[in-house]
Length: 551
Image 1: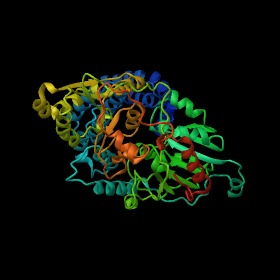
Image 2: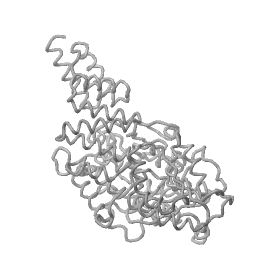
Image 3: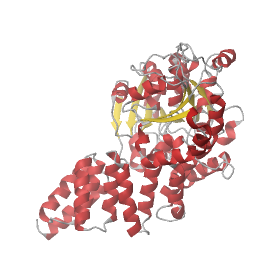
Image 4: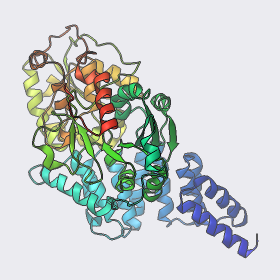
C-alpha cells in the first residue's frame, strides 16, 4: 500500500469500528498491521474490535502489544480490563485499572470502568457510588456516572438519607434528560396501516438482552409457548449469551434478530421497519440503549414487562407497565410514568428448568439460613439487620448455619466486605453460627444448594425475584420485607400470590427439622398458571385492554 491507500484503509477501518461492524474492521486493521508493524494505536483498535466480536484471547494479546509499545495508552488498558473481566479475572482487571488511574487521575473512563467492576464483580454498590461521584457533573462522563450511581442506589443506600421517592425521582429525571428522544412522527414501519389491519396474526416484538437462562425465560416462556400458536413473535436479541434457554426461545420465534451492537438510533429504525403491532420491552434498566431506542415509540403499542423491571422507566412512550396488585398496590400510580396494567392472576408465571431437584427434607443437624440473591443485593442495611435475625433463629435450639450461595463469592473484596459487616454478629453468637460461602459451578448446582436450606433470608432494599421463586419451588420458605419500589416488593408479591391467606399463614409457621417438604409453588397456584397469564396477554395484545379479566 502507498500512503494514500494506507490513509484510505485506516479511515474505512475507523468508520467500521465506530459503526461497531467488528468483523469488517478487524480485517482492515489486520491489513494495516502488515504494513505498520508495532503501531500501538493499531493494536488497540484491533483489540477493541476483537473484544466486540467476542474473541477474548486475541483481544488480550493485541491489548498487551499496544501496552508494550506504549505503556501509557490507558485506552488499551480499558480494553484489556474488559477482556479479563469477561474471562472471569475481575481481580486482575481491577488491579490493572487502579494502576492506570494512579497514572492518569484525570481520566474519568478509568473510574467508570472500576465502578462497573465494583458493581457487577465485587458486588459493592457503595464503592461504585464513591467511584463515580467526581464525574457526575463532568460533560464527558455525566451520563454513565449518573446511570451507575442510580443503579447503585437501588441495591444499597442509606435509606434515611435517600428515600425511595428520591431514587424514583432521579430515575425519571435521568430518563427525561438522557433516554427520551421524542415521539416519532414516522409511520410504525414500512407496512401501510391498512395492510397491518388485515393481518390474521398480530406481530409482537420482544426486545431484551436476557433471552437466556434468566428471569425473562423463567417468568415469560410458559405464556409465550402458548401464545406462539396465535401470534408472530419477533425477537430482537440485545445479548451475546446463548444457552439452552436461548434455543427454546428461538423455537418460539417467527423471526429472530441478533442486534447487540446497534446504536439507539439504528435500533429504533430497525425495529420500526418491522411494523409491529405490539412491542414488549424485556430489558428495562439492564439495557438503557434499548430504552433510548424505543423512546420514540417504534411500534403501535408498547408495554414494559419482566427484565430490568426494577422501577419506572421514566419514559412516556409506553402504553402500560405490566404488574399486579401485590407488586403495585392501589395508589402506586404516582411512582410510574407508565399506566399500570395489573394482571388479576399475577404478572408472571414460573417455568422451572428440567433439572430442578425435588424438594428435600428440612435439615436436621442445623437451622440452615440461605442468602441466595445476587450478592450486590447484600446491602449494608441488610447485613446490619442480620444479628437480630440470627439471635431470633438461635432461640429454636438448633445450631445455625449461614450460607451465602453464588459463584461470585470467590471475589476477595466481596468476602472481606461481608466478613467485616458480620464480625459483630459472629462475635456475639460465637460457636452458635457457622458461616459458609458456597460457589456453585452451574445453575443446577446452585439449585441443589438451595434445596438444602431450612429458610431463605431475603435481601433488602432490592429483594430476590427469580431466586425467591426457585426457593419456594424447592419447598424452602422465605422471609421478606415489603419495600416501596417495584424491585423492593418481588418476594412479598411472590409469597402473597401463593394460594389463600389461610394457606400462606400456615406456611409461615416454623418447619420441623427433618420434615418432608413439598413445592410451595403447586401447578394450580397463580404464579405457575401459564394459561391464565397467556389469556391476559392475548387480550392485551389484541385489544390493548384488560377489561373484563378476573383472577
